[in-house]
Length: 201
Length: 176
Image 1 (spheres, helix red, strand yellow):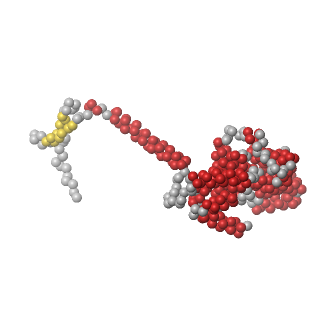
Image 2 (cartoon, one colour):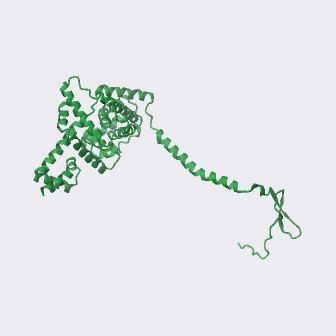
Image 3 (cartoon, rainbow over the protein chains, first blue to last red):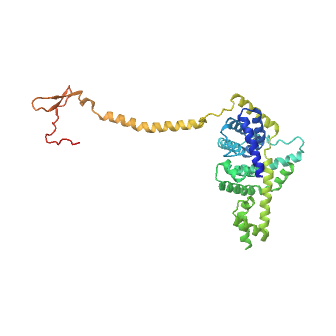
């Protein structure tokens, strides 16, 4: 595991060096590596596709323009990119604190099913997605961040603490609290929905 | 006793499942899970939930390639307009927001320092009676008593003149 991480780090450092030397495909390579997971992170925190897309774009722009400032001895590129995205997501929560109603969600624009998906599966998928999204939205932003980074992105507590800018113990307790609250809020719905979501995917 | 074990497990179960308990507490919870049926059920519920979260959350908001391609095109076009800056020595504090807040702080400090001085300066000026000030003065030696006299010349000179007393004769000479 450690070897794998070390190898990955060396590879990323090489790509960064190429990008800094002016190699355009190196930027595309970095984007391909991290874009999907960063988008998922932003979407899970904001529950809005358009906002997630905007923040993904802003984060990569900022990162590419400031790539020369990145120090691989201090943090991994993944942690750095996640820190940039999380801080932009926090700005968005602040801006949207009083504007929490999203009309696109009312109209069901979020619920795009794959073309091959059967209508029944689509309904199950929608229900499962909605219940998880609502449960996540019920959490406070800090607990949501901790849960998404831990379970959604599979980060270690150390990485979570770096991204969230808090001590490791605080990150641990946020994950624990978030876990407990999420479990409590999903209990009435039943864990069967989560199971359905897994089956559909 | 069973209730106590169950309550203890219930309190610590989430941290046990996430692997962030201290070694002695972790061992104790593990022992209770082995010994008590209720504790075991609680553990299984937590474990199941954690596993499901780990598997279901990554699938939330999974992007399609069209979306990612669209964002990449936007990033590329923005980068072409403003290409990444080369490495320059002493490159710090370039964020405009940071500069703006530093600027505000400097202005606030300057106002805080200058305000009392400005007020104090006006107060000093106002407290001086300009009409009663002598316009100029000259010091002249009068041959009568060989003492230097300051003589005020001008319309607003006070009555009389200030007489400077000569140095006393028994003043000891400074020794070096």
